[in-house]
Length: 284
Image 1: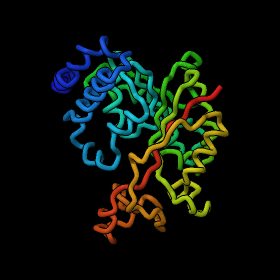
Image 2: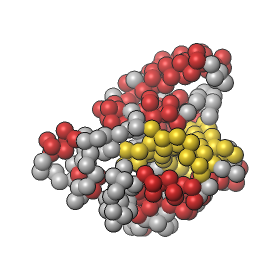
Image 3: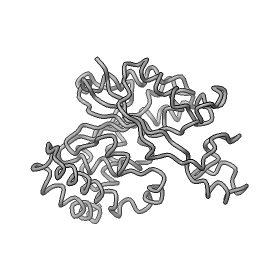
Image 4: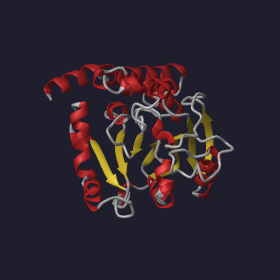
């Protein structure tokens, strides 16, 4: 742990030294400084195992598109193994706040033991983040969606939802979970969504979430129904090689390789899925 802490401190020295001066600086120089510090964190050796996916997930470009700033309070929805956490948590640690947010467990179509594990997320996850970053667990907060305290509502600048909307749709959780996120956001707060993208003319029977893909218009219409306006969208995470029509759904592609060794080279050549990248604003 001491070695991790020393590496973390060294990697963040520039951030700690300069953050007070540029935290609210919206000038070109201020933006460039924030990008440089974000790039330093993305290139840190703690991400040695994560970085192979950067070519598909484009973390620097995606987070800059979402407008992440070091003084923000940012929640990541279903952080899983911590791929984005290992970027966001150290970036926000000095002047902002990182929050892990996961499903309300009871409605999930999972076994009881899985639901029980999810109930333990708020206690366990800050310790996981501490292990990953070498920072104190007390710097980080975590909630399940059914246990967000009243004092956390209206405090969050941005919520990031990476590759999770299809699960919310297919498990009939989208309404309830997005309502929780909306309450957590400040007035004018943002939700950034990255989602496996079906073709615009894909039949709903294929693009209902059960194959991992959603149409862009489905996501935009749903978010509008929840009181969010589309601010902008990007092709940062596009992959034109993805035909988005596999019998086994998006899990046919890497990193899952759902068909095992069958045509593995072909799917490796395609790469990870074609993804929409959307930024929404909470409307009054």
